[in-house]
Amino acid sequence: MSKSLGNVIEPQQIIEGGKDLKKQPANGADTLRLWSCSVDFTNDVSIGTSSIEKSSQFIRKIRNTVKFMLGCLQSYNLDLHKNMLRHSMLEDASSLERYMLAVIAEYTAQVERYGSEFQFPKIVQLMEYFVNIQLSAFYFSICKDRLYTLSVDSPLRIATQAVLFESLRLVMFAFGPIIPHTIEEVYEFLSPELKGNHQSFFIETFAPLEKTWKILSTFKEWTWLLEIRGEFLKILDECRLESLVSGNPMETHAVISLSSIPTESNFSILVRNLNESNVLADLFLTSGVKVTFETDSETPACLRSRTLALNEFTVVVGLASASGTKCDRCWKFSDEVQPVLNLDSSDCSICPKCMENMRHMNAFA
Ligand SMILES: [Zn+2]
Image (cartoon, rainbow, N blue to C red):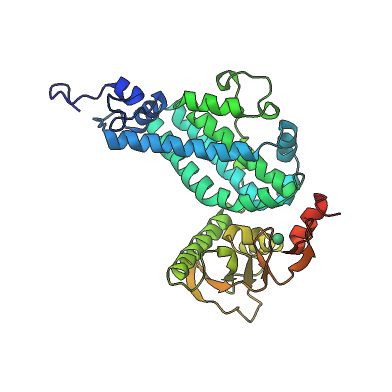
């Protein structure tokens, strides 16, 4: 864009749109603000339809992400949140949530640092990764099952809501100065139980997640686990493309062999605990995970497997078809699924975990 060449785009045109709204749509003030914060203003800056469209798409992504979190926080309040963070309840519920809070605390610290140095492009870049990868591609895909199938007072469901609330607070904190109209609108939709008596996000004092949450003794082990998960999802995609499995990951089991890792290492202990609490299956988006340790002699047969190097260790990760019957409620396959009579006298098949949750929710007499 050059003034002497006359190819200037008026800011008003980006905000309100041109004469032909199909060719020059109205993007709003926040899109222009997001674009200006995402470019390096210490160098020559280029602007055009594609860069504005990219900022507009990112705002849409933020809005959809926030909409999901607001919907999941309807039965949540500040007292529950404070109790959850103060209490060891979170540790007991799931170490996945503990890992996510460590990630959020780290992102919060980085946003604070970049903000104090006026490095807005770095904040946008960082938060783009947080929204697209950490939330959408990772945590949301895992937490939906808990939110939709567990009872509202389940500690695991409440721990999930704690992570969603802290994620929402981070999004509002990081983007408040960049896209204030969008964030103020988000704040309007936050329930009174979560925002108290404040009328505006910009008069609320934001207390960042305490730095102590950054310390997680098993952070390295979690990084390894996510590497194994990434490899498993690649294998799943390959098997889908070759029609070895259907499009439903619940019809599969992940198989992990830790035979080269000592049974009492932090990694083996973490994997064992996650598997015993069924969190590992949620993490791999499958009906179950079969883990073999150093002392086990047999590794279950796989449709496809691969060996992965993790520092001095090697791990074999593979995919197998799930056995058993599909639970009509959680859609997971299990050998323990039982036929039951529904409230409308129709037959359905339910797994023991769902049966317990439904009894708890008084869905059955
Ligand atoms: Zn079930």
